[in-house]
Image (cartoon, rainbow, N blue to C red; front, side):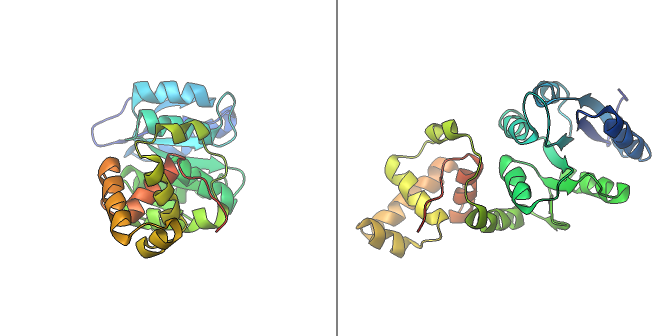
Length: 233
């Protein structure tokens, strides 16, 4: 693989079609600020190689052998959270976009994206930004988007085992689930038959345990880790 110089964005390509990988190599080679540091043809290989190479950006196909792109993205985000992932797919589906971002991807694009646009997306995500539906978002923007989409699509395919890794108590998990559903502290107190102050105390504990600043961050953290299933109101 090509070596990388200081200041270059290190990119890894993950796709099981050699012709498509070659096409991406040709596109990226024309830009001096981009360097291809590795390639993988299946999800399991991608996770292993990314841990060794620590690329800035991984371009990940969704339909992959061994682990699919969503599974590989979740595993990579657990092991190497500093790696930014762009999901590439033949299908530009809104629900698929939601599951990709929830899995930890920073951007999602159909494979017919123009070369110029793809390079722009790589540069954006390497700087910690997110690209969804043609819009460039910061962390607060993607959190708001994720909450809106969760209420539209629900929990979908998540890792159920992750729910048992939560540091929250059963009552705290119950309250956080109601926050996800859009309830205020006052509404939660009425729903659970407890005092408003008790809810506030639980929320303070939840924020502290998760190391986050507010309700939105706590909710998004729980969604990304698959702790909170969706129930009907």
